[in-house]
Length: 296
Image (cartoon, one colour):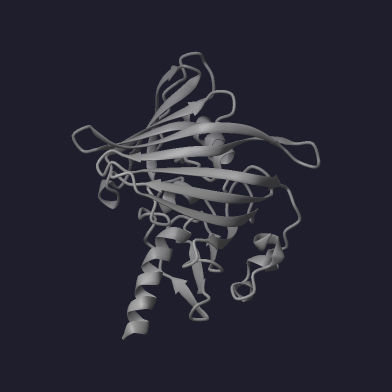
């Protein structure tokens, strides 16, 4: 009974956590994605710049798909409404596994705190409409590999204020996009879910940098127009690869939950793009024996 309770509790925590991981790609880490859809609004840009479909396509790429591969270290600092602090540390590797910003592979190795150390989370992300990502979790204390059920994209990531969907990205066909303004060097895009019953928000407004196409600020609203959640980029750095490419990358971001009063800061470091990563590193057999590529 104790073993069962422990297992269920651990799974609940890690289901949210894992997410991303990947996230974070961390590049992601915190990165916010957008979707272009055939139903997207075609409002023209006031200065005859790119249309809204092109903007969300570029933003999605900048947030989640830069470089064929990526590796980094993610630190989460979670502060609740009473000022209590919790920290998380993990390494993550990511590989693009499809054409035109499609499928991706993520492997995450948890370094701290002690109760999650050596846990490994594996994600095979798909962008096929109607299909869910595949996810596995290895718990070293039980020497157990568990397949994680789909459907938890809008749950807490690692007990933080980030959600799984913040990290791995929202499906490109789930929202209608409208370019509503251009100001302060940003495209301002209103995103409305095509299936309102599937999410807790009525819409969200994203401010996309006109030069880098990185989403710099995202505000979530509930029905009635109440602002309840804010994600914002704190710092962007140019990361240069060995082959000379330079990728603007979000290295510090924050989420504020206006309803609970809690905040989470995500810091991404030791970032390397376009490193050699074989597909087999993202196989189930590496859950129990994670490769050195993700541990170091």
